Length: 341
Ligand code: PEP
Ligand code: MN
Image (cartoon, rainbow, N blue to C red; front, side, top):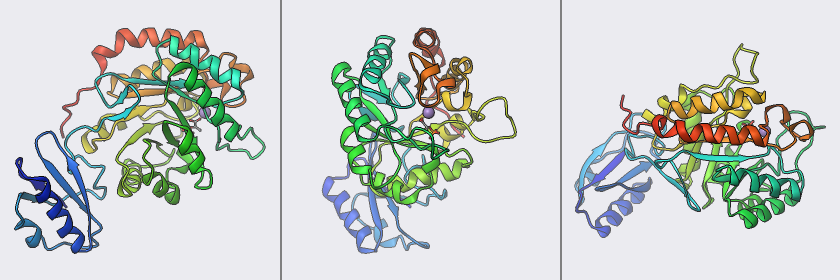
């Protein structure tokens, strides 16, 4: 349920409504809007008798939210969410480009790449320190050492850093080091990890599991938001289909579909679905064309020597080309924020 307050409702009226909601054993989530505050209500197992809330000062309307996901839905919050990180606005007017290697491999590797991608126009640096690998024998990442090198790369370049957390045991150290915490595809339904992410003050980049439906994806984001963290960025990174000429099938249709249903920003990872570097830039362009708020792209100066995901990593030259291409392309292609059903 959503409690819509009058445009001139006072802070104490909002607090009073929140107290009443708590009194009923439910959880209030105040959502500031452009002209008025709304209060999302979660925690009800069945229908709630609205009469007590409806009669409170400052309340104008109660709206029943029909979707199973509540806090992530546009029904609850019509205005787009912008996630702020350093100077970047994810979900703002300009697409945000996050670039870097799949894995942090050494101090010089990540610092050199950070300088190069910054020079080419990237807004943030990515790099995995804890890697979820399909094979237990594959490189698992440098762990804490990798986080340290990422911090040094941020100090050198000023680029905010994005890195993955793979379990609750290492959450605290990842959270302390990075600017945006990535939850990877394989952990999209790791509910204890999602709940821990919900308690964080850092933004969460949530990747879609390769077999997740749109509803499951939004419910995973709902886990994070229901614990109090409203800074969630959704990331489409390809799904499993019968098609085997790419690593995964990039489901670009989910961008406008999500746009109608959720206020959260949506970015595209063109690298993991491509699986091969020559397909990355076209998929990135497709993502921006359907209205994504940005891209997260793997880049490596010597992809043939990369410790993970070399075949899909762009060379620095390819990344520079992609960036100059996007520069002329994205102002006309960038998303229409007025998508309606
Ligand atoms: C990654 O970003 O390197 C990664 C492992 O991505 P995904 O979770 O989408 O497979
Ligand atoms: Mn990767």
